[in-house]
Amino acid sequence: MTTTKTTSIEWIATDTLHFDHVNPRLAEYGIADGLTDEEILDILWDAMDVQELVQSISASGFFEHEALIVARENNRNVVIEGNRRLAAVKVLRSPKLAAEKGWHVPKLSATQHKDLDTLPVLFETREGSWRYLGFKHVNGPAKWGSYAKAVYIADVHRRYSIPLVEIANQIGDRHRTVQRLFRGLMVLEQAEREKVFDREDRFNNRLSFSHLYTGLDYDGISSFLGVASKEDESNHPVPKDKVRALGELCGWLYGSRKEKREPVVRSQNPHLRQLNAVVANREAVAALRAGAALEKAFEVSLPPKAVFEAALLAAKRELTTARAHLSAGYDRSEALFRIAGTIATMADDIYLELERKYTVKVKKARVTE
Image 1 (tube, rainbow, N blue to C red):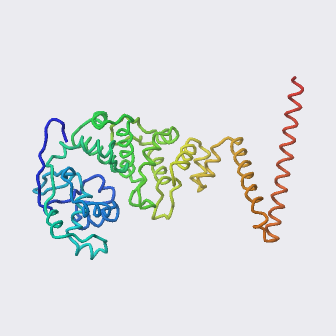
Image 2: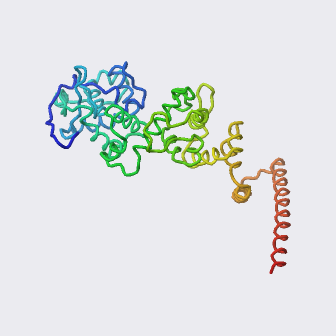
Image 3: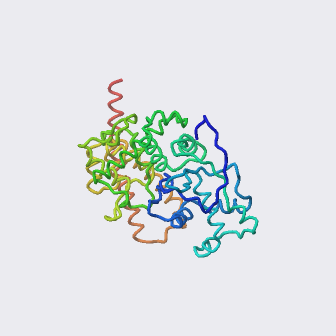
């Protein structure tokens, strides 16, 4: 909504209001142009917790100050802000539909039902409302997921030819989130255009877009792809000679359902940071390409000193746990007894080698004094 004009609220028949097929938050769940409002309602109910709004509206009614923002498009009233609230009202007004779907919905009185026959609406164009929606959902109190934010930013940038820096200024973004999200989406779209990745083939149902746009800020991943800076506004931020690497990165981030290959990155900490270290090291990349687990490839990327120290400390922690459970946990198994003997032998070998090296170091130090 612009700050230069005010728009008065109108009360519009609920049955004339339609969901927005191109709403970024809905697009995140695969809603396309061909779906009916009822099909969209199914997705909203399952994915966006419409139930909580159903309970609130049934108890308190629909607040006028939460008016829906509606654009008049193709002779239809399209709700560009407030699709979840519209979904809740449609469910409340259709108890038969709710029963068929198995959705628990409070029964409304005749008066409550009549009150929902019309809803408060502010008519506005998409271009006139992008600042308000961007502030609210990208950088404000009702944030969308990172993918929905990126889609919205890209749509505003492309549709209205508004530079990213201006979008950021208009919605109060102080951390270059707008530019980072846009670059992430452009990298994802480029991977699909180059046919090195298909998001529909990802192993998990949810597209963890934040893994990609966050990873692009890391030095290792950024260099691995040769990706353009955050300020770049092109739709092909990865150079041609790095497209194969882009496909590999997407595979490591998202896996493949067809190949039954899970992503190596399951969380940003530690897995995304481990991948960042791996792609900065040629031997570690080769190990990952050969099928090594991310943790093992990460070890290859580390200096031997760091690997040894981490392994020794981990062994101490595990042995401390075993010692604490020895009395109640050991069942006189011969196999466990022999495993303990092997551990003892290995520990002796390590200690003797450490002692030898340490003694040599002490002797050298005394000679130089």
